[in-house]
Every structure is written in C-alpha cells, then in structure tokens.
Image 1 (cartoon, rainbow, N blue to C red):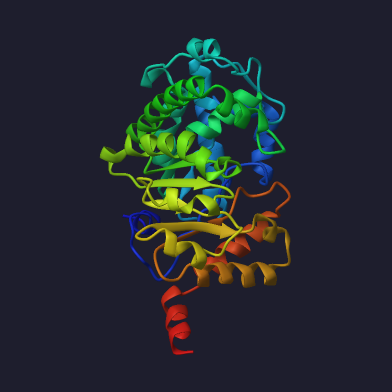
Image 2 (image 1 turned 90 degrees about the vertical axis):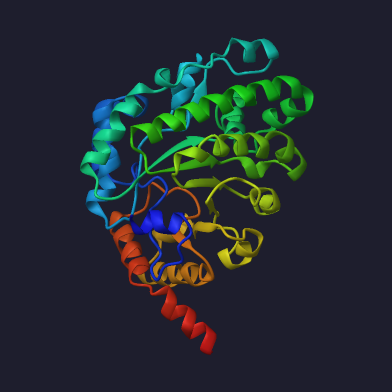
Length: 345
C-alpha cells in the first residue's frame, strides 16, 4: 500500500501525500513539445502519448500519485457526440431536446475509449506511484453538452434547460451516468488504483437544483464502483453551499476548492479524507510565500486524513521550479508535530 492510498482510505498520517490536479500538462515544457506534434485531442487518443504525458510529472517531481492524462469529454465520442477543442471543448450539435437525447448511444464498456484501456497498463508498468483514473460527473458533462462548450457565466443555458425540460434532462443524465460507470469500471479493470469524479460546475447550481439533477447521478456513479475496492474521490468547485449533500455521497475522499479552509469544511464531512486546497495562483508567487501558504493549508488539514492538492488545476503560467518547491514544502511538514504544537499553545 502507498501513502496516497493509505490516506485515501482513511488513515491519518504524519505526512500528507501530495499530487496536483492537471499535473500532467500545460505548464511543463516537455508536455508542450508533445502537444505541438499531436494536438490536444489526438494526444488524448494515442496510448503512447497518454502514457508519456502521464509519466512526465512523476519523473520530474517527488509526487505520491500519477493522474491519467485525458479529458472528461473523451468518453462522449463513443456516444455519438461530435467534439472538437478550440482550445476548450466545442460540441458541434448541442443537446437541446428529448430527440437529441434519444440519439445518444450508451456504448458497451469495451467501446468507450479503448485507447485509455491500452494506456493504463503501460503507465502502471512504468510508474512507481499509484495511478488515479477519472471522469466527469454527469451534471458537469451535461453542462458542456447543452451549452455547446464552456461558459464564463455559470452555464445559464443548462440551468434554464433543467427547469424547462426536466424529463429530457433526467434522460440525458441517466445515459451519462451509465456511460460514466462503464468508463470508470474499465479504467479500474485496466489497472487504475483510484478514481476521481470531477464535478467541476456543481457549484453554479443552487442546492435545490443540485439535489434534483446533480447529487443523485454523482451518487449512482460512485456507488457503481463500490465493489471494486478502490478509493473514490469527488471534486467540485464552489460547493460550500452543498456540503450537506456532499456528505451523503459514497466517496472516501472529498476534494475541496480554495475558497474555504479545510478546518471549516471538515466538520460537515465526518469520516472522510479531505483533498486540497491551495489557491492555484499561489504557485506564481515568491517561493517563501508558497511555503507559508502551503503550510497554512496543511495546518488547517490537521484533525483527520488529508491529501494535499491545489484547490483547482495548476495554471499554465506556473514555473516548474515552483512546483518542486511546493512539493518539498509539503513533504517536510510533520502533521503530528504541528498538531502537538497547536495543542500545547
């Protein structure tokens, strides 16, 4: 067992394991060199490229886990969705009606991203740390499908659609849920040691809307992996108003964004490992400030199991040397000594 897996399964350890969301990607010069040769979506569908990019940060940094290089939109192609990236996801034919939903396929497990199934054993053979597989949560995938891509103002077309066509919305979310379960089970069968479900846009929804269209489908995905004996991580952004609902999800780990200290979140999520939650912009700051604020996150993480991470994905303008500095700051922090010091003050 690794430190990362121990903590993900609930062990409260002296050192917090560390990995970084989007650690395989855009801030590394070696990644940018490969992207110039392939292009983003082609790279996601090439097992050798996926393997190489996944391994790049693990070779460079003293990380406790690797995360598969891919994109949450990848499994949707097997459903018949026409996707491009320019640079973010663009859906050629957005989902706006029950007929659009009916046209979507629910492919068999082996049809969903076979290149991912091919890459995972290659990564596992070369990596010395556990591999995290991942997928997008149904409500977040629906956000892109309905909006025809990203949104800078809270996905208003999706929220309107949920109100106007709830029957079609539930049908879409049901299909996305089944595909996501099959996709993630494939990843575990291929060798992934843990799974993260990204619900990136859960927080744009009021709690009542999330209760109808978000939590039930995320819970079904996570429950659909329950027999596989791998830790399940759920991560959403801006979800402080949803903590009561997140506490009911069948996940061993809850990821927390940078907006609230872990000490404020932990009481609402008992018996869970917390993951996070340094503000990603801190990594552009002076190294001394990186250490100070990383240690602040670690102190707030005391009181239960904690996996150190950012509160969202790493930014492309982060110098790799700053990542090395962050990891050393985390690895040198003794949580038990800090807890003792806090108790004796």
